[in-house]
Length: 242
Image (tube, rainbow, N blue to C red; front, top):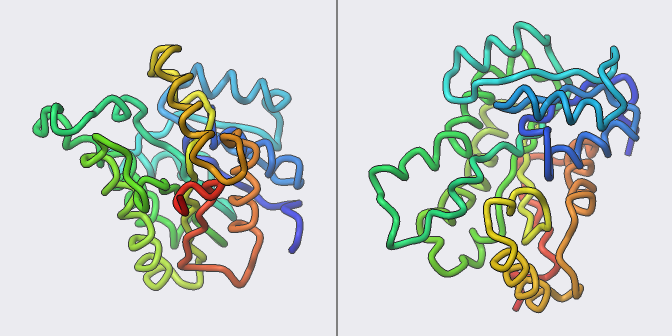
């Protein structure tokens, strides 16, 4: 597979966690990096962690809730070769079923599903090579109390199959991680987080919970493999086999 030299990779949700790990990995491959998220301070901090703003590293705030917001971002930053979409509202991780308020929880879909479609809709004009989105292993093996959350990530494989047809020859794929030890879980208290990671470790075949850098390798494959589209890559350490 080729390197990413002279190619531009936009990471939506790139200020932390999986997104930042993908940005680092793509940067090592020679790519120009654009980071986006909803928080300008986090973007600035992430850019600094990549070595500071240069002609090869930049970023900005993106409003994923509207087509106009997404279009405005691309009009400002220009067309790119690849988009990696890892954005998500971490607050939904506390949405336990059946105790959650369903009326207040409909927004769970806004960033993780409708945001993807807002990006996909403008793809023919602004994305040249690939769009890689993010699912989750709970679509294959739901966790307890995740009845409101598992269907969201479960929608991603069928979405990329449809988008890969509608947007061809643009390549569209989904990476489906298992449990990842990242900032995403900072919404949990320390005791709950540790217990969750310890339990997750016991359920993997590889004997550990992944760090974001391990999952980033799968995104690079999806970005770089020119004969790969409409597919799901499950990277879960064997979690869904047990």
